[in-house]
Image (cartoon, rainbow, N blue to C red; front, side, top):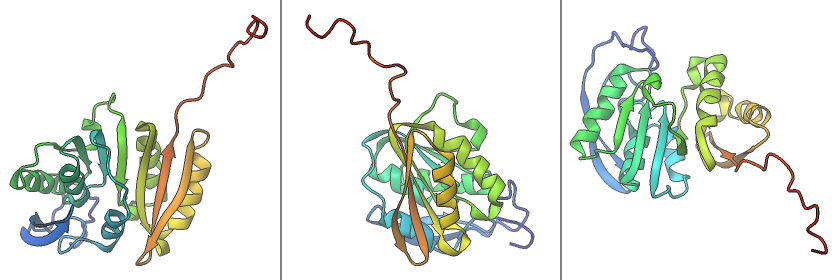
Length: 218
């Protein structure tokens, strides 16, 4: 990719479109990928670990794939929950174009591939599933997670996969320290050098104690 990174907004490297065969949501699929995006030649190991260790999706609502790349997580969620609206979010315009190409080729009309600023502010997510772009750097990654995790709906979860030697354990500690109160953070699975981290957003507690004055003996 030369000087390009998969988180470059407009990659300057040749597009070099290619077709690869992957298994997503239990189906063998041919998808289009390209140079200048994350893992263009295969389903990467981290995403495979995440997909293998995700619980069943809600039947509907808004789902977020944060850092979508060419779309394996978005495609999986759209196939598994056809009544949901999947938001594939990335800063890489080429990656978003690939998500759109793949969604159209697969007949998936429930995927919106958009830049972060194009997600409506009033959308709350029933789930977030992400192989986040660790190589953007710790500060940018933390800002990204602080922007999106609070947009979970109540009693909903974010599932993140992170390579152990790229700071999965320190990220889990940061998540636990940052998202409190009202959240729980767990490691739910390990495999092939990756950790799957779950962030649970709980329901909003009552804002004040219930007044029981006069109840007793009434």
